[in-house]
Amino acid sequence: MDSACKLDEYDGRPVTKLSSAKVTAPGPKQVFRRRGYADVIGLADEQPPEEGRPLPP
Image 1 (cartoon, rainbow, N blue to C red):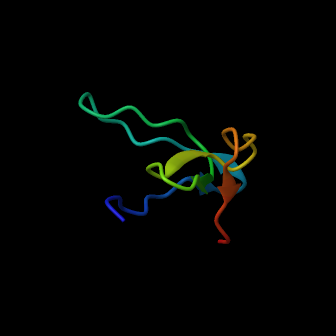
Image 2 (image 1 turned 90 degrees about the horizontal axis):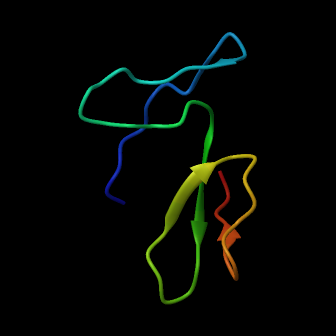
């Protein structure tokens, strides 16, 4: 997997990394997998992409 784990929540509130070169939505993330496609990272409460399934935590 080509990513790194970052702080996404503190004391129950979503947080975001402040960087001029990177844009990230604050909050817990979920990886979705679709057969034959690259994995998609979205927010944990998002619906998976068509024919996608969430990977277990």
